[in-house]
Length: 302
Image (cartoon, rainbow, N blue to C red):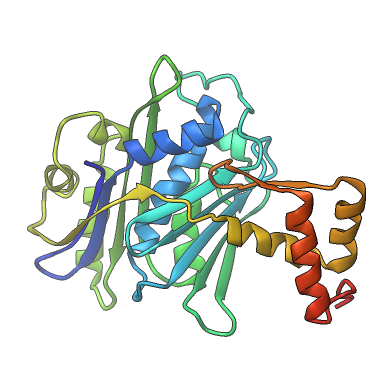
């Protein structure tokens, strides 16, 4: 089962998150038919989104992660909540690059590092919180850790891994995030840093049958850990016909009327799951009549 745990060490020096996202990333791969390097990059973002989403306080809160480093993959965008649900897409899902000299997928160059990582938290307030930071590597984990350090002054370790099988499917995927508690003395910080330096490649922890609890203990073997919560995680797209109708409404009366008169139908494809929504001529006429009844017969110039 695809799950995520969070916990603390018993001396309250840090909180941590560990999750297995093999099924989540494989679902995304199937939706988007991603190349191996695109699967790895999107999978890392989905994994990070789930962990950051788990830090949100309320059920209706959402977090959106966006990264664009100027590389051939273009923008990668992920949205998650605190219930273990995530969705995302990569702008150019079929891009592929030669592997690096060590045989690993070249995520860094596929993403690029001449750009920004952006995090948006929507807590239902008038204006969502938005922060960003420059990319440091394009490897995603390092970039997210840098964001937390520079934009939120929160020392954070983010380790993300996706292994691709010979047939292009997801062999394993998962992640680990650790955030230091405030007020630690130098000796305590050094002990945590030393433990992190001894970590293996993160993918190796999830390419086994070990439980998440065992993985956490293997990574942080010098500390007494307490698991505080466990939840299932899933790829979940909440698109509906009604939501897509709102997309058409947002075009404004004039543009929608042009589609009605020239094409006589419309097709909208969801970015997150590639599901196609069809609007026939009578459907467009119904929407136009609604806009006319509401007095919205001209596109907004604002």
